[in-house]
Image 1 (cartoon, rainbow, N blue to C red):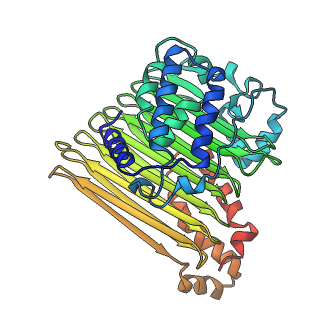
Image 2: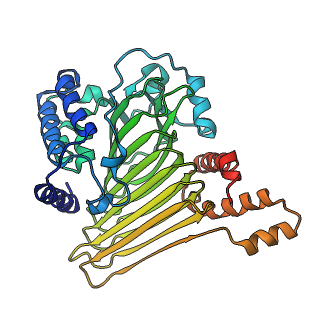
Image 3: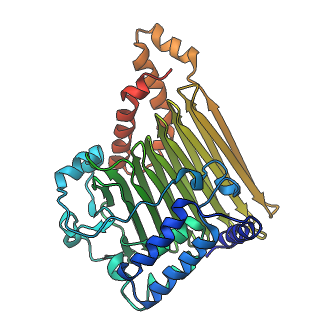
Length: 464
């Protein structure tokens, strides 16, 4: 567990001790559900111990709320009215064409695919037999049954995170465990698809562990999608724990599409070794509530983080990207660029906290958050933070929020471009800078196609 995570946990515990919390219906529901489901959740005795400890922590902390600084703009305690029941295990009738249709252009990218339906691994919809030998995969539900070893031995550390992470530890049912051997370059991306198919509202709790060995290279994609007919009021709690070894190069893309009444909270914990390069890109589309927590710790010198983020919100969407970048060692570089396009009554949140530890000299860190407001009812809350405890550093941040430039719009129209087409061109130019951070050409084109599809939807095209 990183020093920053310990500090955050300490603040949360101190707060919970000073403010008496009356459990909400949702909090009480989770605790009651665990008592009834504990024996059915996969895991060895060591895992069951971690689950109980995590639930105890959740019982102490409860759901995050606006009095916790990191959750000031996303009061999960108020937003989550009740605890949905986990989806029961059972056979799925989902077919590959159904998933391809939901993935859209992303389905056309050549990739190794692993599929999880309503939180459980679907072997018949996955490419397990085609995976290269240097990439070792095991469903988390199987890995949890082992008495010791990776990842069982590290679960207890992650249980000490915030209330959402503790809830994930208590209820996690499945996910992927992936190890990429040292000196290996994956020949094509690995696509992990999490599909919601149940017509009944349910809760899905998944966790994925990824370990890139020294000098390994690869592209990892997570797609969280829903099939037509799936309940649009389901709840998802996902967590990805990623380690990049010395001189590893990892590109990570996460696409999350959430329905109008859906709620999705996600944690990404990344630890970078010396000279490692990590390029994450987080994209959110839809009208639901999505919270991305990104925690990156530099554990080796001369490592690089290059983050891109894009939120496309319409209707009453709520999209929150909150980051903690921990420069714990010297000579590391971090770049973060976040863009939001907000229509209707949607809300975008960006919180970028960068810590430069004592002794982390020669740190180079920059971040920028920009929002394009397509509606006077849209809202953008930006909170960049720098905590610098070293003197030989280069750090900076910026944030802007604006409407479409009427002069540019007039320029396009004066050259015969219809108004709606001109608006689309200007918005595409705005978001293109973020999408361009995706290095893989096929993925970049697929994400651009998804953004353009959203842009031309009626609720967005009609925004003023």
